[in-house]
Image (cartoon, rainbow, N blue to C red; front, top):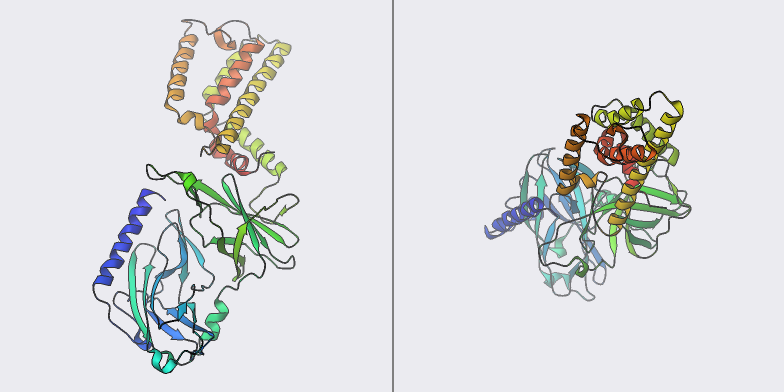
Length: 458
């Protein structure tokens, strides 16, 4: 988590604490709008009168005061805060985990938010012990702390609500609210960490139609220094009754003295799989092997086939030849060809040596990236030009080449040094051109480069 996000969350929690110390007022279900809940009023509603020894369901119904306000899922994403519930229940009564409807995605300023727009209801199961006397149980009380946001501001909300179980009346809206809750998956899911990806295998019947699937992670803490990239492109593969979802991960900076290895991986990763068209399933995954062998990409997935990536790389490379960024590099090769003196055989030999230098440099850089990323480094293409020493060395080399153009001295091994072209000189020129020109490939080869950095190495 970045420092800015940490400060944002600390500020929001301080605001919530200020509201708590301000002295909330008890309210009834009919007017359950406690202090500070004017942007997103909430009411506590019961399914009916509870029965001893059975699970009793209550609902928190949120209604935004105006359409621009939205609430948050349990895992709010990159920003926001999840809801906090403080129950006051009779002895032996226990409140379970809240059950949510299918959340929505809202990206603001490059941050992913898991939100609810419009009115929505969160159900909470309460276990009533055997032999509970409802008449003497008294009222239950709940303090709900949550966040209401628009696209520009967020306001902490707090509501204090009470409910008398013995006088609870079944609300006719409960059927609609229950139907909106995401149902649980009746089969076990599996998860594993694969380099910079979280891979989750979810058993979904092959007959299930998928629209545009998306996986909402309820487990935000993944152990180590990994955090999910909520705005990253998720990939889905499917074979038979198995759906494999991959979520990109990034390393977050840890405070000084904190060892990433000390943060254990979670024993369970929970979440919601959005199947598209307003459908979803709730799952809980256990650690296990999630194989990809024979699992085909979904139609319309963000994965592209190899020939598509090769064509994209070829088209991007052709466009690069007319970009000003590449002109200085191409001039090295043009000078070498000019010095061939019209000899077609020499020019051909020179071009092949130059190509070999370019290919070898790109392959070496790609191999270095794979090795460094496997070691836990978060680097990308053209990483070498982010090192000050490398940039300084290239600057000095550029000065030397300029002096060579002015015939002040000769650089051994380069075909542009004034002598006859040589295979070694052309090869060295190709190495230098590929090493220096890597940043120029970004605009037109982003698809091919991005795919090369995220697909599994052979």
